[in-house]
Length: 291
Image (cartoon, rainbow, N blue to C red; front, side, top):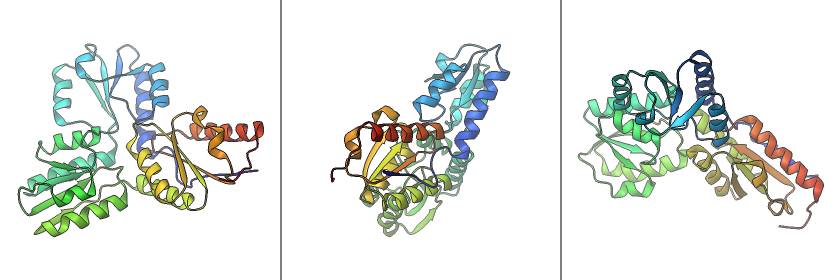
């Protein structure tokens, strides 16, 4: 029998649970008006679909919002202009922005107001980063790869840094090692959220002790992709999946220790279904060949 182990910290974080509760409550209390989320409330397709079935479907732009409706701001946050647009359209706004993302936005504004050249370490196309730039008044430089800190153009030598909440701690350290020598003054707010750090540390510890890691979560989820990267770095054969049926029998050949973890936007029941899928494959065809 294979030993299947779940990471100590995996699946939903409190910010995601809070947002989903807000969506469900809004659909129950706003039944007479259209309810929409502006962008997927979290990066998990199964959850987004289930919320749509409850009455909260997704729109990509406020231009798609029916008049008099209620719009829910996703966990990743939005720029201030979005709130202004919603007000001008006389929409009811329910703000499900994660409080830890709000902290990033406030730190970014603070650094700009203090005269720092704001640098955001993160993915320029991620909605959290786009929203943070908006809260900084557009005065920000985004750096995606640690090594790019060696060549990024700096308006002055007084540099302030905030970090996308789902980044990897090791990548942040590498980024700062390149950036610091170029600055006369450097102020850093490490805004990687604690749930992200906990999940990365737990995944790293488990990946060291197993042959195969299965990481469950949306392919568009930044924190889930980083979990997969962390597991690969520790030497485990790693697969990133969204659905239990993606698990293939060949992945398990020769593996006696299998680890399962999940991103912060992945519900616990989905992890359980993945583990059930592994057990099902084991019963169908025990695989004992060497890797």
